[in-house]
Length: 274
Ligand SMILES: C[S@@+](CC[C@H](N)C(=O)[O-])C[C@H]1O[C@@H](n2cnc3c(N)ncnc32)[C@H](O)[C@@H]1O
Image (cartoon, rainbow, N blue to C red; front, top):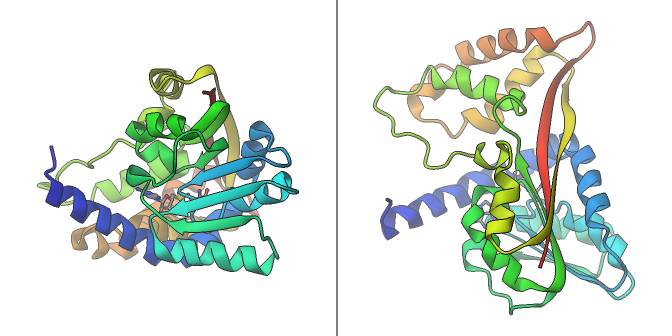
């Protein structure tokens, strides 16, 4: 069980690494997730006049999509741990002339909102990393309000990630501690529905949303996965970047056709009502 100092330094490390990755996330990851944002907005069904919270909004999604849908009269608050993510989201809102969306720097484990103030809360690939926060999100919703949340699917569904994690895992020092969290946990069968019901949500519905990550070549997949997962690994792994990228290119070969690489991925999407 990490003590408070460990927990604080892990939080600082998460803030730094998400911040350092922010620009590249906006450029490379956000376009891959477009179909998923569309499904989230569709299932959330935002209506004019609603007040909406986006937890871990990164460079602004899906908050920016929802802002247009709640106008006139509605408002979206997105927040993120990493200041650079927040400033990118603000820049995009400014470029799009959106005046009914704000982005705050905040930790989901210390949310500073009054109870019962949102009609809708959404979170794409962020709240699922801290399932213990789900009950606090329920308290922020008005009675009848809804949460739409996505989690990574399990290892098979998240093949693009799990292939890469397996390759990089071989280079981890043998004495390295196990990862502090199992980010596939809520993607296992029934787990997200259980987490929502345990938090007090009713009319819980979950579904799998299946897509494909698209790359032009195996080498582009290798670069993408290295940037996503490799840069934060220990120096022992960083020292093998060349071999790791070559292995990643080989590992993804079964998904390559003449002119593209398509690796399936699936999110689990959950909806619950307060
Ligand atoms: C995978 S990104 C998702 C970003 C965005 N929702 C999207 O779909 O593009 C996860 C985000 O969660 C943020 N995050 C991680 N831990 C957080 C915390 N404790 N509180 C708030 N945000 C957090 C990260 O900074 C990052 O921007």
